[in-house]
Image 1 (tube, rainbow, N blue to C red):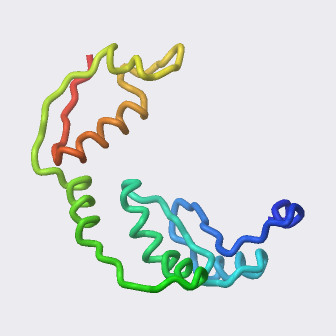
Image 2 (cartoon, rainbow, N blue to C red):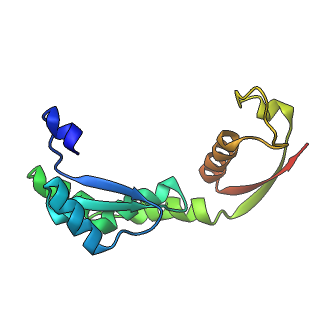
Length: 142
């Protein structure tokens, strides 16, 4: 924080990436040390999916803080469509069989890969595609 202040940057909010929720006492300490409001210190703990993050930040109150800080008109959030997306991501209704081999692993730019399966990038892209069509893919690796 000192490095940012030395070049004239003062944050309005701090989002703390963490592997678990951050206790209120720690948030208060961060608030004092960084000279921001306590409600401006927000935890962003690990979530099952990137699509869960908006609801995590909403639960922490980041959206309401930003709306107040920018003097924007406030209205309740309608999570109906987002909840449907989360349902599709976490509980697809159908399954599709597929096969992954050397063609699908060629996306990985590593010269040597000790794993006999696609790298994380390929797996993540597959999950994104599954969510788009509401199907869970079962992949056999060759």
